[in-house]
Length: 591
Image (cartoon, rainbow, N blue to C red; front, side, top):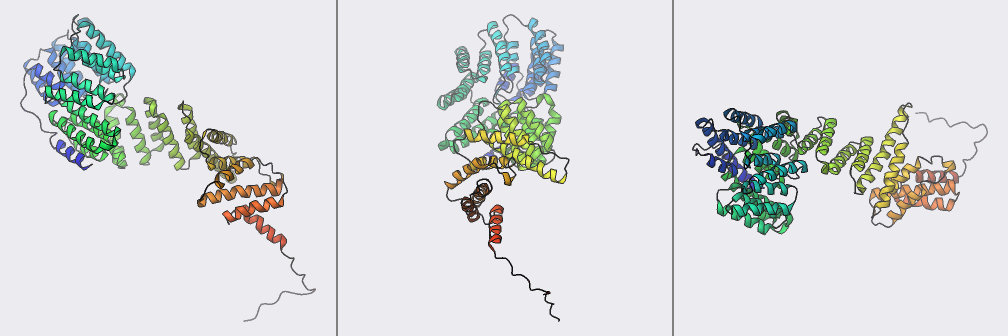
């Protein structure tokens, strides 16, 4: 969309502009963090760690900014300096635990948290607040793991017990409940926070998000506007307003264009209020992913990748966008770069998904691409049907029939509670072709023995499809007939096991008009089979002639019909006259 591209370019032009004037108050720095003005907060805190180097809280909040900006090594260094400044700093031990969580080191996280607990004053809720925040990092990225949310809820409730009047903690508790769609508990927490601090832009914004989850867009917007009225420079309210615009656009096509435009404008406002930080632009990239504007994502992320302060996550977005824009080579380079820089602990299911897509689409490594797609499913089982069906379809498109068939079977084994008719049909279809490939190979190499169990598997899948499908598909009957043909190849002693399947083909296609050329050929095949059946099994010449005639009328090139009528013509032709005694062939005329 042109409007999005223009806004992205305006935002991008400001990304490297920093603020040279910072307040020196820790309270101001914390307010900047809350408003997601991370560059501004970082500048303040760096100054404070110089002028007040022995204040462990300065180091903690500097480390926290690094955590949020996805620089775990810098965060760990800041927290360690905080502990050096004050060995009894509970907050900085919490910070080390959060870094361990981000590195998926649960044992290390628990060990650091355990060091913080004895150092935490009885009525001090802050360490518990930041443990909860640590577990909830990236909770905005869609479905959130229940185990992490529950750990956050447990810590936050302990903080609530220590200090029931900590409004910030109550907002975070509401966020934890909201991540698990526990709307009543979330609402109670937000309401309690607002009762303690009605002027909290964070609490108003959080409650607005909750209303969005309920598709109550009117009340959602009211809460965001309330937050903006309290603090016109509170960027997160504009971001969530933009996300709400997008959600509303997706649920109401009549206003979609208007809402998308409003959403982009609100995100532009968010960017302008969050000092155009890299983190803000990365969140903008998330918004564009949801919007599906991969052209702008690739442009924004590519320019960001040239920054001296590059965050490795930029390569993730380049990879995503490049795949969607069919720029497979650059996309694969970007995703390989992301995997190399991020390390396995920061890789999410979607990353494996896009890497697999790019490896397959670029033709670089199909085998590894399939492995990465399956790895994505291990991390996000909600994608099982989508991914396994995609892999199977890819194999089918390449005519790798056995791989396709077994992958369709894997799909059926992993996805429960759904009929999956398409997978049953194409699974049976692929088993048939896999057997055909083996038969063809056996003709060239007698050592190869076709596996007849493939036919059994194929017939089983096709039979299931026929039983469950509300609308009959003639191809299912046709391929069951083909499979049955392999059990009945002796025409002199034809058993007719294919007959009911070919009759089903005739029943379905005879009721359809007009027929495509392929349908005419397939219908001719079914009539030709019946011609052979009546000729060899029933010895009924009238019925044989009738069915072969129908086959020839539908497809003059049908082999069985041609053979039948050619032989019939040859049998009816008069014998040649006898040669005269002693005659010899005439000599060729002399030139």
